[in-house]
Structure formats: structure tokens, C-alpha cells
Length: 103
Image (cartoon, rainbow, N blue to C red; front, side, top):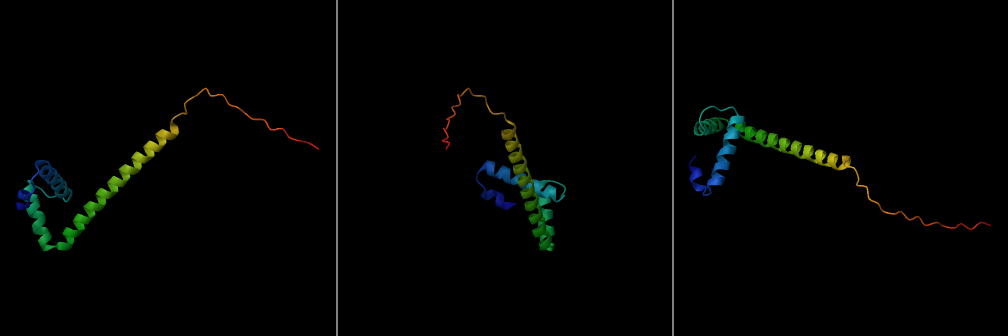
């Protein structure tokens, strides 16, 4: 994991390592993060199609989770607006009467 030395921001490095760890956990690798990364690299070197499909599946899973969360929040917000009673305002209603001419 030599590329970590090129990341200057500690916050960026921490987030990257957290996301990498979650990805490797998703693939059920065991051990320390560096061991998981090496195991993924070894397996990916032997089977590049598996590595590609694993990354693609993880991305699609994350996209589905995000879409579901957005849909849930939107429905919840729309439901809250629809369920919100209209405020009562004392405004006089003026009705203009039209006179009709009859023949």
C-alpha cells in the first residue's frame, strides 16, 4: 500500500482506508487491512474478471442503497408536506355578483 504515502491529507487518507476496509470486508477477506489488501491483489492477479466483477458489484450495491435512501427520504418529505394541515387564516372572502340580463 505504498500509494498511501502520496495522500497528503490525513482526513483523506483515513476516509480512503475506511472505504477500502469496507470493500474488503464486503468481499469477506479476513485479517488486518494490509493482509486483506494483499489477498485481494493476489486473487485479482490470478482472476482479473473476478476482481472487476467484485468492484462492479460493490458499486452497484452502493448505488442501490443510495437510491433507496433518496427514495425513502423523498417519500417521507412529500408525505410530511401532504399530511401537514393548511393554516387557518382569517381572510374575508369577497364574491362579486354578476347581474344577468333576462329578455
